[in-house]
Amino acid sequence: MGDPENKRKRYCLMCNVFKPDRCHHCSTCNRCVLNMDHHCPWVNNCIGFWNRKHFLLLLFYGVGSLFIYILGVSGKFVETIQWYISLYYEVQPITVQELVMNVTVDVTYLFALFLTYTLTKFTHFHVTLVRRNSTTLESLENKGLDYENAVSTSLP
Image 1: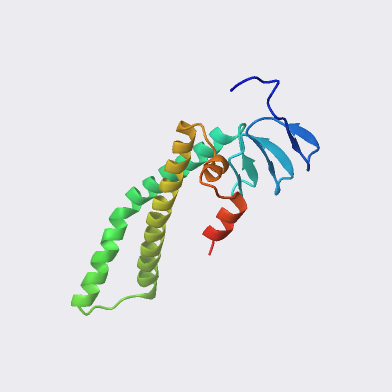
Image 2 (image 1 turned 45 degrees about the vertical axis):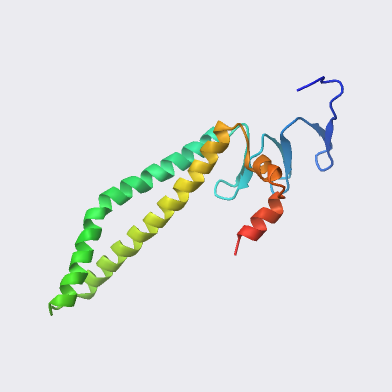
């Protein structure tokens, strides 16, 4: 890393303090965060050096819970698909309660599949960053992107 005396010191104009390496100012929290990864709206806090482990645990628990839900509801999902097939081939009376229950099971199961896929990709991305000892901001800087522009262009 070189000679520490010749290293350029960075200064935060918002906090009026010198910043250590890998420290960024969060405009949402209005403070400097050591090893800042990103500002997470789900936990309403910046993910950095002191709480990155807890953020990763949140992701692992979320993915695990969704997998358990999918495994538990998959039998009922298959039953509802069989019910729809039997409605197509046989004429039988249906109740509103039965229809609402089956549609609810199908919609929540498909939504859980979508969330599981998305959250698994997001967790994989953050585990890769931890393995590389990097952050989201540093990976965006390496690609030549600005964090604010990357977030605003990725949102619809």
